[in-house]
Length: 202
Image 1 (tube, rainbow, N blue to C red):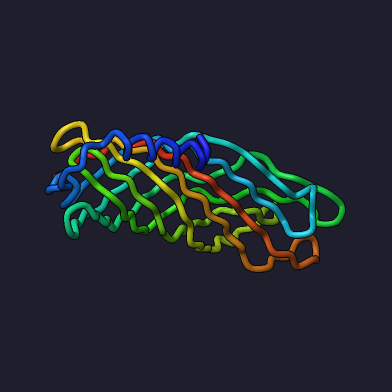
Image 2 (cartoon, one colour):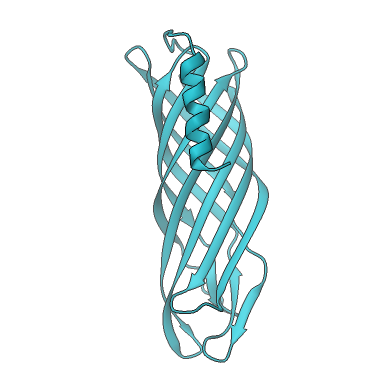
């Protein structure tokens, strides 16, 4: 599913939704489990050889607190945690051997948007923090890098306590320069996360 499909999905929900107060369904504390489809592309600047791409599916967790303002506006501070990885590596005479190293993606973020009694359509703005990226093979340097990301999502209530969501968010990280076989180069990692979650409210 790409961004265009998500916007279309959101438009259909808006068209079908009967105007109603968000009430308290989307407020308060919640916790959820998700299935995250992660597409990752990591590369060393100026090299076509050292460009690793992969897709994987992992489990994630998230938690947050919903706040209603007015009749239908809801915003929700939230934290998510999932895996971020790419298999394999690359090697050439210029930059030597590189591996994709790292394991997690931590996302402190805000969801905000329009909510009815059954539906919550929102945009996402958040910081992505990770230890993942391309590094020289054998490097023990674990640099944390962060980047802002944007996304969209939709959540549907099952009952007063349970709901399900689908969302997509994209971000890019630029790591500091590293020594690849005697050459200082920056690395860049792009990720697109498609997340399907099941939420329990308290």
